[in-house]
Image 1 (cartoon, rainbow, N blue to C red):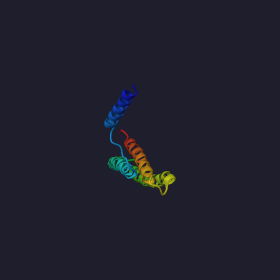
Image 2 (tube, rainbow, N blue to C red):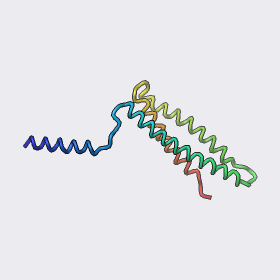
Image 3 (cartoon, helix red, strand yellow):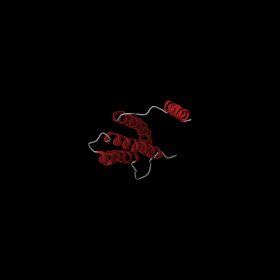
Image 4 (cartoon, rainbow, N blue to C red):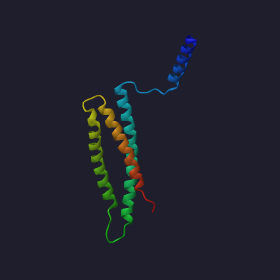
Length: 129
């Protein structure tokens, strides 16, 4: 009975391994994978930035009040401040693993997370008219 059970466990375990998606195995692969996730997030944010900034320029063009609000200038200042925040925040977060092979992974994960959040923030700035 033990032999049959062992064969069953081995068969099920082997099937699960074959069904599971391939995962990064080495630290270098995990770092590269996290870096790729960040690059995709950054590309999405840059595309959203162009749309949001153009939208804010359009709001400035429609602003006929006595006091000009300066939507585009405020949006640009906000983005520049956010970039400084993101870089400093991810430096802090990856500092726990400073000097280790895990540091690039932690930094890339932080960059991706904050960049995805910023993309949502930029999208939400495009108010309906």
